[in-house]
Length: 180
Image (tube, rainbow, N blue to C red; front, side, top):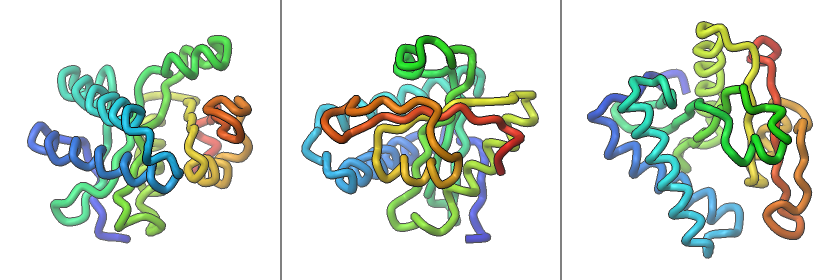
């Protein structure tokens, strides 16, 4: 999709972006077969809203979002910020000084059209311009893990059965200039 615009979110986007998070997370949970985990889903939505709030308050210093728009409709998001406590703990602090790229969501109606790749490319450009040499990324979602493995190779950290039997968590350490 060539007519997608990627830009920083504005205050006027917050309500729509929060609604987008709910839609994307609900869709993800359903596709992962965990749609019955309502408390976990709500925690995930709350975390993304908090990240966005930190971006808005800090002007992109604490968290930094980019959004994808098709016309005036938000169809994707990506952000970076400090590595999560989960990443720090599960890597024995090995990635504690890296930025974590996350909140990579594409609207269900626009998936498999290259939007995620456009968001990743825009984020890599942003990180390069900020002098960032490497970042980390993690996922406990099987469908996302398949995408990240294809794009970034095997994870640097594989936490087998972290979320339950057969539900692994994966963490990648990625050099900015080796991708995109």
